[in-house]
Length: 306
Ligand SMILES: NC(=O)c1ccc[n+]([C@@H]2O[C@H](COP(=O)([O-])OP(=O)(O)OC[C@H]3O[C@@H](n4cnc5c(N)ncnc54)[C@H](OP(=O)(O)O)[C@@H]3O)[C@@H](O)[C@H]2O)c1
Image: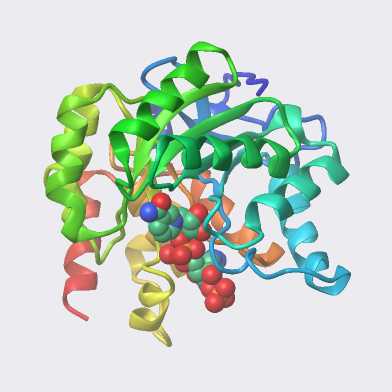
């Protein structure tokens, strides 16, 4: 992924977050996206990526593919690079591979997938299929999915990294019941990244897991940033509070995402998006001013009071 740093930053909090990237693309439209570094390499990625669970799982016909193609093209045109998928998301990996190949976007993307298998052999086979599905000979990040057969899968991922076939090794969960084991694994295993659930109304991972990632030098990818739509239901019909304008938010989605990516140890949130209008909306959370600590507290108090 080509990264070009721009001198022009949008505001004080953007400065605190780091740099911005115009998507490494001559096609990138509009203001640059705020980026953060992956601690193990210093490589900067935009703070908002694209999640492919559910809405990308079932597409089969051209009619199914059309909105996904439009979403993906829009995401890339606006400077988005990080795609999060998994072999357990139905056809999502293969669909992403088709879109990446059709649109010729592979060099500009950061492709992240997962391995979820019960033996070394099954994990290897699944990973080889991921290379075929994604139509690439290098995957940027593969993470062990939900602590499944962790030791064996991490060994395989480290071999792949040493061989230069993948660039980063990670682990993911979104289940509170796995937090204790996940934390223990983070203490034992050197990882480039973790992926964890974190949202304005789901802040448990900020108690120990996200700070531990910071201490251990791991990038933090955030899944379920809207609680799978739960936050939209909680705020339905409510006008944005006055403070939203202080952080350049014009929608609830931007408020929810800016809360996440303004956490100093969070690297990138991956909201599920299968509509181009969501991309237009959500990528604005990677632009403009970010909440400081005091405003983050007000945001928490607001949601807790609903
Ligand atoms: N353990 C793991 O590794 C793990 C677990 C869970 C998720 N993940 C990853 O995290 C990603 C995100 O999770 P998720 O997609 O399940 O949940 P989510 O990001 O919390 O919510 C996504 C849903 O929010 C709605 N939405 C998105 N942008 C919107 C906008 N601007 N305005 C209004 N509504 C909007 C869409 O709902 P509609 O489509 O219904 O309109 C979308 O499907 C997944 O796609 C996956 O890549 C990983």
